[in-house]
Image 1 (cartoon, rainbow, N blue to C red):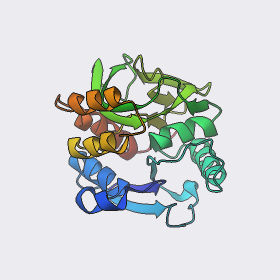
Image 2: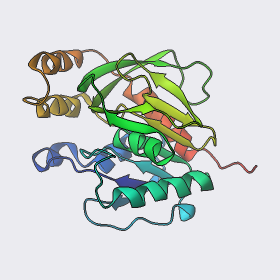
Image 3: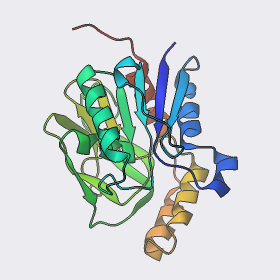
Length: 238
């Protein structure tokens, strides 16, 4: 049985939490769809909980957040050090959205607010061939972000990309660190909530197109399954 430690870096707005749950709740549902035996621990940064020693963990998943990785909040530098330790220790680790950006920044990449504006709704990403983690040629996944990885770390290979987000998925050379920009843990109803939350912040036409895009199918289960297998596969010795 795999035991995954979820690092919660942001909170679902209170009025939506009763229906949709927290971000860890969403990831637990996603992972249990692929592996019903998985067990979870949650470390909540918004609740002030301390980060554990990543060398003592079986697997790590870092969630999304409203914060920017460059915001200088007092918990970001310790989380970056946590990431560097986990990466060096080859502890299986996945980051999604903010987690994707935080891992990239911690390991030498560049993240900033994109001049392309908001990415919301259903986006289609190309999958790099023969990457060993994510199958198929393309995936349609919900996203919600302005910030992007502009320059990946030197030891990261881009395995998921689009015109809007050229570095939407990174696989690191150590073979145990993976991160993605879009949200496979979001169902369509919460992806719609994310679109609504951007009203008044993103251009009206962008919000309208994003809402309409969610009428089309999502490949969330495919990416969620790939992430689950990455986190729960048996450890190998080098």
